[in-house]
Structure formats: structure tokens, C-alpha cells
Length: 165
Image (cartoon, rainbow, N blue to C red; front, side, top):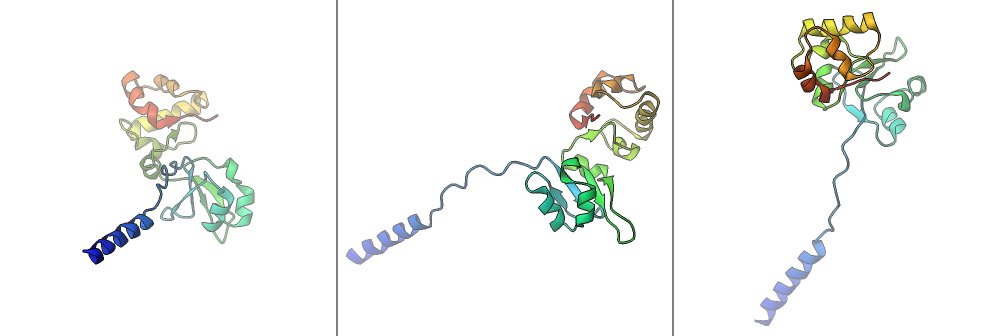
């Protein structure tokens, strides 16, 4: 009986030694996503050490000085080319909405707006036409002035939209 008890005790002590402490809560989700390069390149989170992450993703130092991390918004895409300097664009609307990011009414194009629930190509064109005629939107509620958007549709769109000045 003695050797069996010793073996069992050794196993229990070994299991206790293998026990790892609780790692704590998972890291917070990223709040600022950008894309460097073509649409099939991975996304870069800019919440921590943004300059380092952008350089690791293949962005040149020249492009980084032209578009510093503090000036980039979530959903931006930095396109680079050997023939031309880098330029700023937007991620495809499907990627923006898949990430759960909000669409900016003052920066969005028609294809991006048309992917929103209840907004088709025609309504997207009217939203852009209103922005061209009357200037930038001051708040999401300004969409009520666009023909075809009422309180119910605005309630569905509000969590997916934002306005920057």
C-alpha cells in the first residue's frame, strides 16, 4: 500500500505544480483598425504602439511621416506603391461593417453607404447629394432631412453611423 500512496501523492503534487495562475481578463478589443496596402492585407490595430505596428506591416518611414498614427481614423487604408507616394483611402465597406466600426457620414462614399441595412444605391446617392448641397452633416439626426429616411430607419442606422467634423 505504501508505494501506491506515494505514487498518488507524487501525481497530485505534480498536477499542483503544473497549475498556472489565472491569466486575468482578456485584452480589450481594438478600437482603431487600419489597413496597409491592398484590400487582401491584414489589418493593423493602432491602440498600442501604432508607429511600430505600421512599420512592421510594411509601411515606409516616408509614408509614416506623411500620415502619422494620431491622424489615422479607424477604417482608413494606407495604399502604397513603388511608382507613387502613399495615399489615404478607406477600407471596403464590408470590412468596416464586419469589424463593427461605424461609418462616417462625412467621409463615406455611395458603395459604403449602400451596404448599411435599409440603404440601397438610390438612397446612398441621395445622402451624398444632400451632403454636397448642404455641407457636412453636423449630427446623425441630420439624415432625417434626406428623402426616404424616417425615424424608424434612422433608429436602425444610428448605431452604425458617426459624424466627424
